[in-house]
Amino acid sequence: MPVDLMLPTSIALSLTTWAYIAFRYIHPALGSWPVRRALEPLLLLHTFRYVGLMFLIPGVTSQVLDARFAHPAAYGDLIAAVLAFVAIGALRIKKPWALGAVWIFNIWGAGDLLNAVVRGLLFTADGQMGAAYWIPATIVPLLLVTHAHIFALLVRGLRRPASLPKEALHVTP
Image 1 (cartoon, one colour):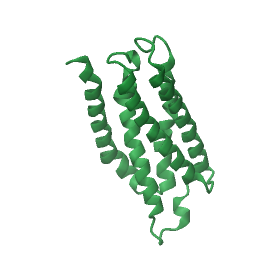
Image 2 (cartoon, helix red, strand yellow; image 1 turned 120 degrees about the vertical axis):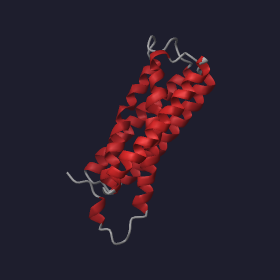
Image 3 (cartoon, one colour; image 1 turned 90 degrees about the vertical axis):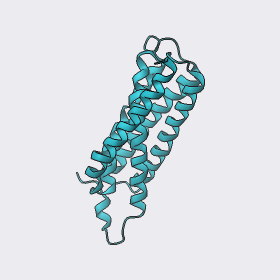
Image 4 (spheres, one colour; image 1 turned 180 degrees about the vertical axis):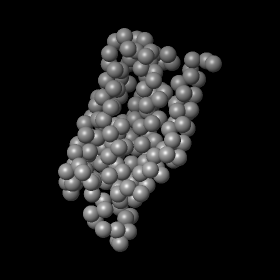
């Protein structure tokens, strides 16, 4: 297989696998939970986005990556991780602005990933990722799937039936 097809093929297969796992296992498991409680495990996955900082470490990639890709990808992920922690904390202590924090995280995080994909295609030659290849090949598809799931949960929270008590949306200790 040509090198320029390996990463797109890996991303497509990983996205398919993560979507299957989400729809087959994660969504049914979280579907009966109150929205605020169901958000937390999905947000926790995003607290590991500091790993994107490895795009800035010489030797992890096969050569120094173009700063037009590496810096926005690395620092955008770091900001997303911090926003995920803030959103989790707000949910856990039942702040009235908690769902707003989740919206901010999710808009930033999804936008950051899409920005990184576009910049990666524009500014990173095939094979330059080196050992960091596993991030776009495995982790980015998982994060995209969870962003979609978080958006679905947020919309579900906006549409909650009037008969559902407000307390049902709070995180249980």
